[in-house]
Image (cartoon, rainbow, N blue to C red; front, side, top):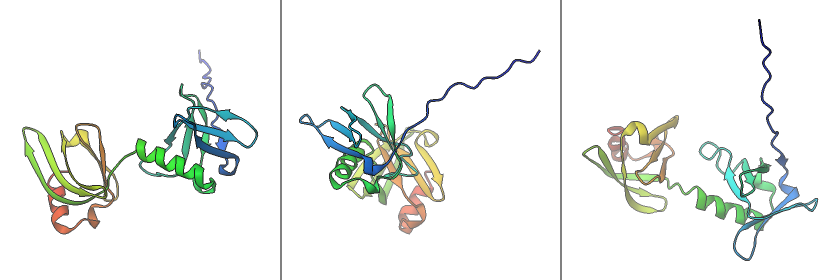
Length: 172
C-alpha cells in the first residue's frame, strides 16, 4: 500500500523593495524598521542571507524572536541613513578581517599560531585541526576560524605574495 507524501508547509519569505523601507536607530541604539505602508518593527535583527558568498546583498530582517520580516535582495536603493545603519550593524556582526600577508605559522601540540597582517592591521590567532578550522570556498579563497570563533578571509591565495602563499600552502 502506498502512502501519499504531503510536503510540509513552508512559509514564503517576503521580498522587501529597498525603496519601501527605512532603517533607523532608536534612543537605545536598537534598529527600527519603518515601511512605506506604515508598518513598524522594533529591535530588528539584520543578517546576511549569504554572508560568505554575497556579503552586502540579500539581507534578512527578523524580529527579536527570530520571526522573519523579509528579505532585502538589493540594498543599493536604501536611503543614505538606512545604508549606514545596515552597514554598521553588519560590520559588527560579520567582522571578518582579510589576510593580506602571512609572516609565519608556528605549530605546537596540534595548535597553529598564525602571525598575519590583515586589512585591520597586524594580529596573531590560533587554529586547531585544519579540517575543523580551514575551509576552501572555491577558487583560491579560504575561510579560517580561530579557536575563539573569529573568522579570517583569504580572498585569493594566488594574490598573496609568494612567501605568504608558500607558508599557507604548508598548512592548508
